Amino acid sequence: MNTEEPNNLKVHHRERFQKMRTPFYCYDMELLRDTIKEISRLTEGHPYKVHYALKANANPTILQEIARLGLCADLVSGGELKAALDAGFEPDSMAFSGVGKADWEIRLGLEHGIGCFNVESVPELENINLIAGKMGVTARIAIRVNPDIDAHTHRYVTTGTAQNKFGIGKEMLPDVVALAHDLPHVCLRGLHFHIGSQITQMQPFVMLCETINELQTHFEGLGVHFETINVGGGLGIDYSNPDTHLMPDFEQYFGVFSQHLELRPGQELHFELGRSVVAQCGSLITRVLYVKENRDKKFVILDAGMTDLIRPALYEAHHLIQNITSQATDSDTYDVVGPVCESSDVFARNCQLPITQRGDVIALRSVGAYGESMASSYNLRQLPGSLFLP
Ligand SMILES: *Cc1c(COP(=O)(O)O)cnc(C)c1O
Image (cartoon, rainbow, N blue to C red):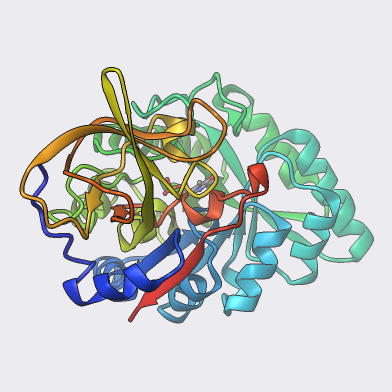
């Protein structure tokens, strides 16, 4: 039985939760601020720029806080560009990633003078050049390189191997760099990388640094200098023990880059962190609709499902589940499931919980990233609400 006190769901909130319509995302804004302050503390005095990847969580209140505390924005759609502008992020320091940018999204980015398009293919490069030419502007770009590094994470969240759709292969890079220099309406600022997500070992990041060092040496031989190197995001968090690791080890993470990456004089190093900024500050608060017993199984059926939190169904992800109202001292084993008509709508199998009853309030922890932002209305369900603990 898990007796761990859910310390960001302080006891006095529980009564309040019980009166609220569930499910909803509950955000600990103090933890969000502390996390960003820690990132700022560790990057101060270095030529580093930290972007926040909006796709992890684009709730307007969360975005405003992150913008206010000085992170830059990393976008993957025109909708995110608009949300970032609304939240107060500076267009000049925005980066726009993604393999399939539509013309209207490129135009929107150019109209607002965004800092950098991370370009993922030759046809995209040519299209950006064409659109910028028609608009009479120059597009600042970086080339996204596929470094062919295995991030040792789930196959759906690894992005930097040759098998993935992302980026441009190292062997093609010299030609693409030459093309970017030849095109009149783009300005090549640097190279961009992103090897995957939920990476908890530092080794893939060390390998990334080594790959970048080799590439930089190669291009220096050709007389090519890059203003910026962007190493993407991907730093993982502790889903099993959120309360003992409310933040990932940012010191170790940034230390890897300061130790292994050979930045050139005047060069800026950019990061694009998503999950590691917001994941631990969010919990999904949901209510038990029914406890159902089959021949050899007990099911806890929640009012939250895969439409509210799709990570378990999509990535086989595990979130810590806590019954925050049960006073029971005995526990039992349950499959914790949602109400959606899909067999994959399961949050956990064989989960130990205190004896659980209809009406109990349950918290699914560490859901601040890729939770609310991935919610859908499948089954015509209502989108989850949100609550912010100051
Ligand atoms: C998703 C994404 C990120 C953020 O990844 P996290 O694992 O959430 O840190 C950064 N850069 C790019 C290009 C991405 O697609």
